[in-house]
Length: 282
Image 1: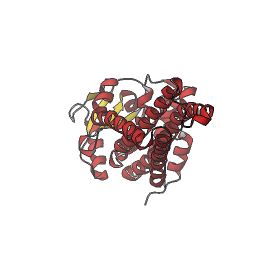
Image 2 (image 1 turned 30 degrees about the horizontal axis):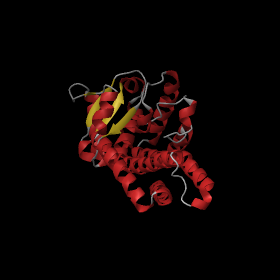
Image 3 (image 1 turned 135 degrees about the vertical axis):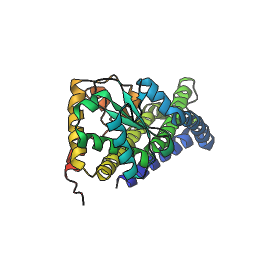
Image 4 (image 1 turned 120 degrees about the horizontal axis):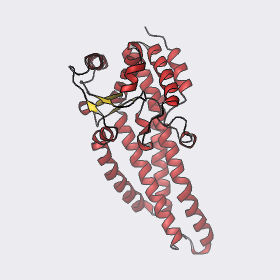
């Protein structure tokens, strides 16, 4: 169901892009905006692992440096049918984790020092399995596609805004007022709609990763308990996270920042926990 929902939402983003491009610049407007967005997001997709790891001062660890964590990732990656990803530790007391990398052969699983302190083995296995499921589900690629479409929509909206400011708003000389209002509304509403759809895609992928993580670890209760602990801890020890990377973490690092929750990249934590606790493993 969540895979179908992701496809529908990506289709909605594509449809929104075509609608706005057709209104403002016809096919040429769509193509130009899409190419610019694709180039920018291709770069972000290709180098995202290096950027985010540097942003959070993450350090790669070997089996000799973190034997228990390394062996846990190796065992779960084998169960998931994945190549062994690189393992990183992020300094800081806030418990959280994320996966990055452009594909299965260039993947990274990163955990904070804080998460290693507060989770037991079953809970940590659930978290690692969740992140490995993101890698297996190609969520980095899907996120990049969504970002490309959303970025193109934002570019077209910005073009509409400048057209309105400099008098290019009217598509019909007999209806200049209507054309101006249409462009202003497009410039305001289109980026909001694109952001909402993009966040909905991110939430769908979180549900899929929860399901996949529970199946890989075989312990849905472990992941459920981990999410409960992480959610509580994020309120007590907030993370100084960049909003553009919030969707990558297993729990929203911006929890408690009311404005940010309007465009949440994560489903309600209570709902995720309830779904996991209702799962029955064979």
